[in-house]
Every structure is written in structure tokens, then in C-alpha cells.
Image 1 (cartoon, helix red, strand yellow):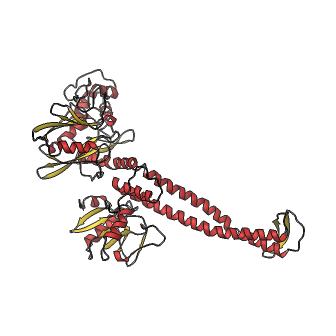
Image 2 (tube, helix red, strand yellow):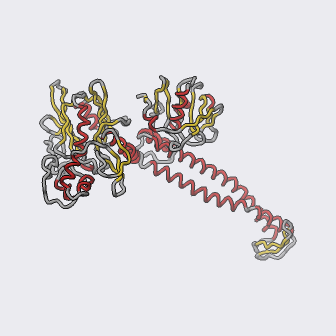
Image 3 (cartoon, helix red, strand yellow):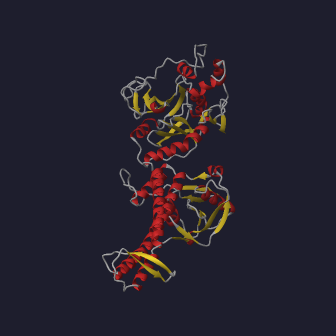
Length: 544
């Protein structure tokens, strides 16, 4: 966990969450083993609250990102749905200046009694936890159960919840002249202050005055590069190099954590699929190097044929020696030919002819193996590109594809039902649906099963990428540019400029015989050149 998410950061974040007061909890989903998304309805508008209790990425904030939920939620998610879905948020408070936020909830229980409950979020790195209590702080359920936790508390159902006790001071109310000689000492004396903030305070001779000013700084949410050349974030740059600024702390956290958190979840859920794919690419590259060397040797086998012919020309030689010197009538030079002294000249000649025939056969086989390895590299590089854009569900579909092809053992992975629909993206542009496949399972489904013959299909030219299908038989400029932008963005060329995107009608797309279904050929195409723009993609309307 980044220690920059300290108690002071949470104190600054709290006003952003005030908008949730009076809101009704309408939906609770999980995203990963320790992450939850609460959808809260406030004045006819939905807000999504991310609560992550993971060791590395623990945080709480409003989110605009899309998270996918597993088909079978864990027991805690079901418990929360049963006990607090439909409840209203009466209040949101921070415990002192610690990294603890608790929500006072009000609603009707199963007995139709009006009750209060508390949802307590402890954002403390590997000690992070989510606790639901009744109005008397009796624990109803807890994410991470523990008989005696790090702070000597019992985290079990029916126990009484206690806030962690420490002897640290509140810097907003108890900032006074103490004998503090180092940033670490400052962190140990005051609650909610990280090393990032305390190090900033000690950049001046009067740390107390500097810290007091920093606590009152106006918000300037920033991703920063510290003096240790590390990327971090805070509610204010604190004299560090600013890499990117944001309009809110929630947007900052959304940007900083989303991709890194997603990659970690995918790695965990798919047994490090990215590493497996990279190993397959390297294995086939090494195989091609070895096969190419074997091919060069086999291609030199023509010399064995010439040696066999020369020996036949001197079949009258009777001496059985280790070698014989004869005139090579191709070069008009003398040539020494090694022999097997146990057999005669004719038998030696036949031995060279057999070696030549074996090499000719090997050339065909080696070329086949090189082609297979090249196809494997092309395939796995395609999967590698797909992993760069995928959601957790997309990655699990890629893993299932590899299981189906017996590249990896099934283990705990469950096979997909033939009736199960892949989780492709659907955008709405000018009231027209544009479907985007982000892996081979999705690409084949939207192109070969969903799409109609006269609808239009987009794909980057001569590179791996998503199949994009526009559900329309007539295209306007907006649809063409949008579909091309999506095809360029979800491809291996997303970082390039002036990307060539081909488009044609679905009826002109054919599968390539002898190749996997993910590879197609097409005709009657037109080409548009487009510069990928992530902001354009983010502003598109997605069909839920």
C-alpha cells in the first residue's frame, strides 16, 4: 500500500464523500477477493463507491471506472446485500485522523423494525478490514476474521467492535512544540501523518510551522515524482515534480490505482497468465533459432549427393580405406571423401545417398516446424496484446481458451457453458450499437455469430487487435471514425499515430483454413487512418 494514503489524505477526501449522505445503498458487488463497489442513489443519481481492502491497493473513493463482478459472489457480499441494501447513509465520519472511515446507516431490518448499523472501513494496508456492526457496535460480520488482531482487538461476529487505540496526537488539535528530531519521529507522535508529509515538513528549519501550513493547503490532487524518483500521489504536490493533476482526489485515486490493481487481480486469478504467455513466445523464438540452424545443415546435404555420385564413378576401386581421393568433375579438383572401411565403395556411395534423402525429408519437416512456431508466436503475441486491454472477466476467458486448447491444465478453472455470452464491450453512437471484442472468444462471437452479413467490420491493418462490428448497413462519418478509433485503441498499435484501419462488410470476412478461428482474411475493404485518443474513448457512451 502507498503510505501517501494517510489519515490526512482521508481527512481531505471526506468532503468529497459528503455527497453520499442521505443516499440509499441500491447495489453491492465485489470486484476481487477484497474489493467492493457500493452503488448509492442520491437525488436520482447513482454514485459508485470503491472500497478496497487489499494489502497493496487499499483505498476508498468514488469511482467512474467499470468493474466486473463474479457470477458467484462470496458469502460476505451476500451478507451485506441482505443486511444493508436499501439502507440510507445518515452520516460519514473519520475516526480521529486515523485511516478509518465509518458510515452510519439507517433502514428497516427483516422484522420491519427501523434500525441503525455501522459499516466501518479500516484502510490500513495489510491490516485493512471491513466490519458491519449493529447500533451498539456488536460485530455482525467482518471481512478478515481474527481472534486477536494487530491492535489487540477481537474481529469476530458477536464481539464488540473497538477502534484501535494508540497514543498518537491529532495534528489538527494538538500541534505544539515537542522534541521531534526526524521525520520518523514526527510520524510516531502524530496520527495520520505519512513519511511523505513529515519529510516535507523537515525540509525547513521550522517543521512545526511548515506542517501547520501543509495541513491547511488547498487541494491540488497530483500524481508526483518524489525526490527518491518514485511515482506517488497526494492531495498536494509538496514541492515534488507534478506528473499529472486532477480535479478531485477520487479521480486521482481512480487513475493511480485502477490499471495496477486490475493487473494484480488478473495475475492472481489466472495464475499469472501474462507470464505464461511471455514464456510461450520466448520458447518458440528459441525453437526457431534451433530449427534455422538445423535447416542450414540440412540445406548443405547436396554435398552428400555429390559424394555418392563421385564414389559410384569410381566403383572399381577395391581398397577399403578411411578415405579416398577422387577427381570432382563438377569443380575439376581433387576431393578427399571419408569412407567406412568395413564396407565397399558402392555401399559407401549408397550411405551418402541415404544421408542426402534423409536431409531432403528433414528440410520439409523443419520448414513445417518453423511455420508452426511462427504461428504460435503470432497467436501468443495476439493474446499478449489482448491482455493489455482486458478486464478480469476478459482475462478469465483468455485463460479458458488456453485450457480448451490444452496449453494449461484446468485446475480450478470452470469450463464455459456453450450458451454463455462473452463479456464484449458495446458502445452507443448515434443510436447505433458498436460491439468490440477484446479477446478471441469475444471476437469470434461478435463477428461470426452476432453480426449480420451487411453490417460493417473494422480491424487494424496488418496487426493484432479487436474485431469491431458496427450494427448498421449504412455508415456515416461519425460511425466510421468512432469504430476506427475503437479498433486502433484496442490493438497493438494503440501508442502509434496515423494507424491504418480497414473496414468492410461482414459477408466479405472469411476464416483462414489451417489457422485458428481468431485469424481471418477479408476483401472489398476501405482504409481510414486515425490517431488513437484515449480521451475520445473514455467519453463514449457504453451500453450497460
